[in-house]
Image 1 (spheres, rainbow, N blue to C red):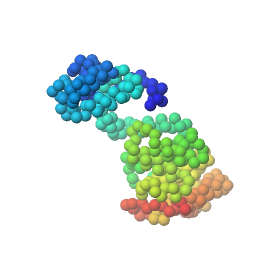
Image 2 (cartoon, rainbow, N blue to C red):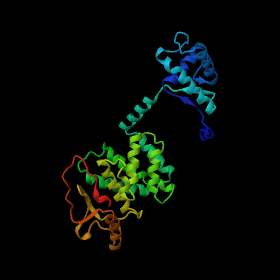
Image 3 (cartoon, rainbow, N blue to C red):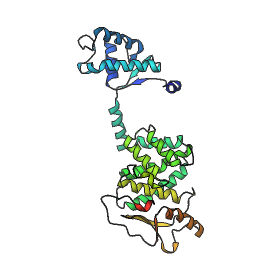
Image 4 (cartoon, rainbow, N blue to C red):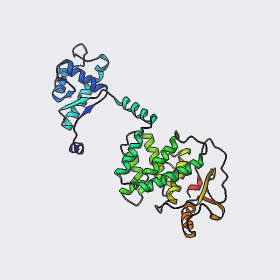
Length: 315
């Protein structure tokens, strides 16, 4: 609270039904002309104490359905004014539900508040934009290969993967060692406008799983769809760990009950890295992760209604 007071503000605004009810009572009783004031709240408090209850017949402007919650609302509002040192507060016509509807409408019309939040976090935590974009594009390419024929624009999992790729390295601003854990912690606990708590939790799980041993994810709540995101982001991060625009050695990916596979062109032509040394260096971390590398086409598995946990991703 002290830090909040030290930061300061230009204007205080209250929202929702209780604030509007108190404003109406203050105006009807001549305690305040507009909004909420400290003096008006003190007068209303005295009136409630004198009346001994919130009585709509004795308090002008009080609706019967608001009577049971008025004393508690006035007590909380008085405490807010006292703790923050507020003298006057405006009242918004909108409430929480209006904000939710506004956010949902923005998503439909391609003005998603979550996109603005992701961009803000990248700036705040000094994420290297070029690397984030490389990882995002490769991760989406891998994901698209695992979900052929799916609708891309309205795919919530694909959107979640793109956000995870862009925010995976925010933890580097805290520490390089175990940065993925710092990233996941921030994503789990930060205020992220537009994101629901469930979306934040899922985003944090995918980011946490994109590095390190997967044993830590056994009780993390990853579901079948999450593992596709983890595989795509984890593989893209490994391949692009040099943080450069390297040519990629694989053609396609596939998954089955045993895990995931990445297929290379036979002979390494057309899609290999620029040199044998680079190619070996690019493939080694994938093999260490348990990903199967094959020379030649990879046969996609039959469509599945649910995705099992891929053993090929970890040991």
